[in-house]
Picture 1 (cartoon, helix red, strand yellow):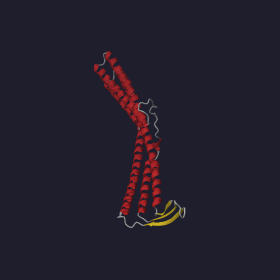
Picture 2: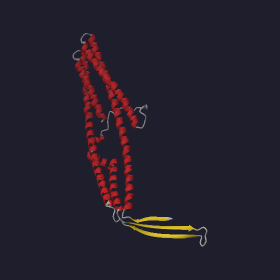
Picture 3: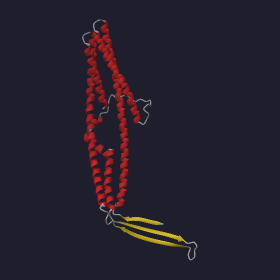
Picture 4: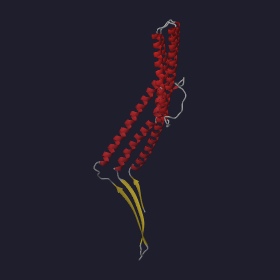
Amino acid sequence: VNLEYLLLDLGGRAANAEDARLGLLAADWTHNATIQSVVLEVQRSFVGYLDAKARLAAAGDAVAEAKAALDAATVRHDAGVATIAEVLQARTALSQAQLSVDSLSGEVLALRGALATVMGLPATTPYDVSDLPSEPPVALASSAVEELIAKARAARPDLAAARMQAERAATHVQAVRADGLPKVTASASAGRSYFRPSTFVDYGDTWSARLLVTVPLFTGFESRANVAKAAEEAAAAAADVEALDQQVILQVWSSYSALKTAAQMVATSRDLVASATQSERVALGRYQEGVGTIIDLLAAQAALSNARAEVIGARST
């Protein structure tokens, strides 16, 4: 039976234990960051799918309006007050609108499969979700950006993981430095030997105890080089934390600016849609009455389609 115990290593054992503890915390934070990345990817795919569905519905409205323009042009042509060129222009606009519907239909199916995939489901899984909300939540746009930055710096798991790795690297320097310092070790052993044949005694016991002091005299400057390497790695880890911290601030600032812009665009684009809708109705009425041109009508319908795309983009952002 042998027993050996390290009595003193000038901080090496404690540094190794702290290194392991910080490594565990960093792994936990990295795990949390991975979960958040999955959640974010699902949210992005979800909003992208809703955006495509909304654009598909808007394209369907554009097809209905193009059909109304074609019907008006056909009626006027049959009455002899419009040329065949007007009918052909209206039919071309209808074909373009229908082509947009066909393209968006495929995009919607692809995005639905992508959303299923990020949720861990087969892309062919049959499901559907609600439509894009007409009133997007823009409450965060009224919050102070400094408050949002402070929350991000305190709660971002990837930043917390980087901080733990930096602390771990700093602790590792102490462990490496302790490898080149003296160590004090205590050891004891006990044994029993049995004799066969037992001429004089049946067995014999042995006991020993030692106190060992190990002092590294010269290692070819290996210890000093290892300490310098560990110190540089700790400095690099600290620099990574600083860079990531600045990146977090930039991401919050950019997202906040985009949210403020989108909140303003939601209101502005709704006014644009209302004006474009009225303009399209007036242009259609004028054309049906013979006081407007097919060019004016098609231009008004194109402006209305663009306005709908603007409001959908603002709501999705």
